Length: 338
Image (cartoon, rainbow, N blue to C red):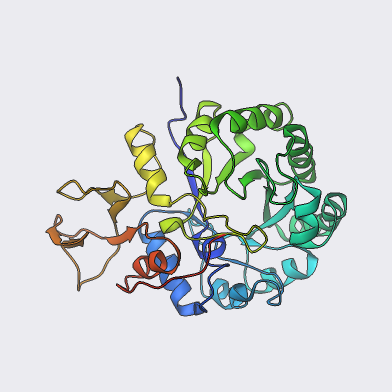
C-alpha cells in the first residue's frame, strides 16, 4: 500500500476546538495557544470564525486574535467567514486566507447556517468575488459527509456535488468533514471515491471527528487514496453546537503519532518521552520556556536534550485538554465538543 510521503496538518483547535467551550477563552489565551502550536512546527492554524456572536459566542474575539497575528513565511492563519459581512470583517482584521462552509445535508445546512444547500452556495459567490479581488485564498468545508444528526447516512454523490461546486467557485482546497464522527473506513472510501471522480485528490482534505474512535482508521483509508491534508485539533478539543453528542476533531498528537510511525513527514517537531507511557497520546512537542527548559512532564519530569523546546499536550478532552495545551495543570469539565 502506498501512502503520501508528506502530509499537511491543518490545526483547527483554536477555532473548531474552542467554539463549543462553555467557559469564555480570552483572546490572550487563544494567542498563547496559537503561538505554542506554531512553535511545535504547525504552519497551518485556523484561528477563528467571523460569525455572529449570537450563534457562536466563543468566537466573538476572533478579530482581536487575528489582528495580533502576523502571517509570514510558511505560516497560514485562516478564519471562517460564512458570508460577505463576515469576510469584510475578517479582511479588516488582516485575514489573508479564509474558509467558507457548506453541508452535504439539507437539514444540517438549515440548522447550521439557516439556508438550503443551494442558497448557501449562492451566498458564497460574492465572498469568492471579494476574496479574488483582495488576493485572499479561500478554503471550502463540506459538513456531514459521512452522516447527519438529522438525516442519518449521506449519499456519496451528494458530497461530491457540493465539493465540486465549491471547487468550481475557486476554492483551493475542500475539507470533507465527518461532523458527527459516524464514518468508518468503508464509508470513508466510498465517499472519497465519489468525490475523487469530480475533484483532484490534491485539492482534498480530511476532517474526521472521533465520536466512535474511528478517526484514525478513517485517516488511514484516506491516505490509501492519496489524501495528504488533514484537519486536527490539539488534545481532541471540540464538538458541534448543531450535532449533540459529537466529540471533537481527531487529536493532533494522535495523528502525528500515526504519521510518524508510517514514516510520513508532517513538519511537527516533537520528542518521544524517554520512558514509554501507557498511552501514545501523550507527547512532548516543543516551545521555548526557560522555566521548563530541559524537562518534560508526563506524570514526572524527565530530561530532554539541551536547548529543547517543548510543551505537553495530553488528550484529556474538553476543558482539561485545553488547560494542558495552555500549560495550566487544571482540570475542568469543559464543553461538550463539536
